[in-house]
Image (spheres, rainbow, N blue to C red):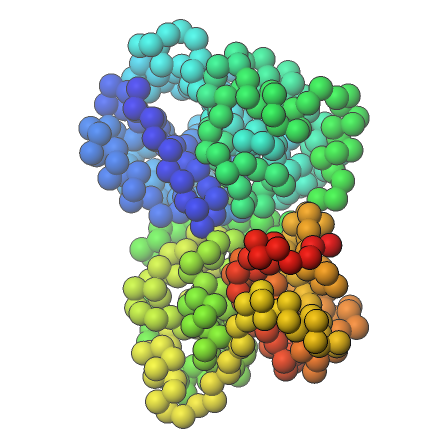
Length: 461
């Protein structure tokens, strides 16, 4: 058996290519599918099946394009109601690729249609060796029960299904069976995922908090308490995957815009998206622009902060960055990139338009300000569990995903010095760009974030 995991850090997403005797299956593909086609060709494999473990809500899948280009059959769980030709499978069904058997187990809980795939390479043994768990079982966690795929079900009902799927099906597998999920740390489809990309049933039985022996009622309560708000793009992405996304090459390439055109589009309500680093953005940017750097989890935060229907103008260092941004935005269903600022900020400055800046400070600078600036405001934009695990004294919590709503309800003074901090300085740069749009006039982005603050030995609440 040939087996390969493809890991896309931007979305914390894992997909798989399984091959045997010249045949292959791709499981949970990302939207841009060239890598699967190229890898299959390199291994002498023909892609026979494209299998989805569920209707993904956190990214747009490339199943239709991959099937069209390879001649493969698309496979979904029978409750997915996919709106294109596909094979609908149910619990116990089997899919053969060469001498490898993929046994479907229906595992509702994260979504009603979720399935897992038990892999047996019969050339080695007739006993299962691996299981692809989709978003049902992660390394260190299990899937959230409250997302778009559960439409028509309460989170409590879905959590009950998840308990049964885990205990009556997945945990019946031998301890040595290797576990390969569809997501890792950083994904919003779970809460406490490990950085590890694979594990075993035995290790998860020992170390995964959600698999500890407990009554079903306790599990339901645990899985439905203090859930973070689901990003707004999740329901839309799930529906795109139900109908199938257009091929990437069908998207028009963005046009090069002159600075005066960008100004007009900004006035017309377009999102001017600056994809440069926090330091580059801070040194000078188009007033009113949003910073989401390509160096981090760009697609996830773009999906959270930009409406899927928004028209976008990109500011980047190069045309290569523009092309990269277009693909990564499309991975979460953002497709209306109309153009980019020709020659970037160099072109903007040459015509004499106003340039906005954002001051970057170190954690040492922040510590000095805390000691000497009595009216300093500090905003921590990490997720609640991160904030609760330890934060700068006096910092208020305002998670980035819901920042605008939190600030609107707060009594923060928009003219006072305001330091913004996250884990490392990436999310806080996005947050400062949003706060600048809201009228905050004395903003500071803390480089290095809470990690650097703790590392320097400063006090923590």
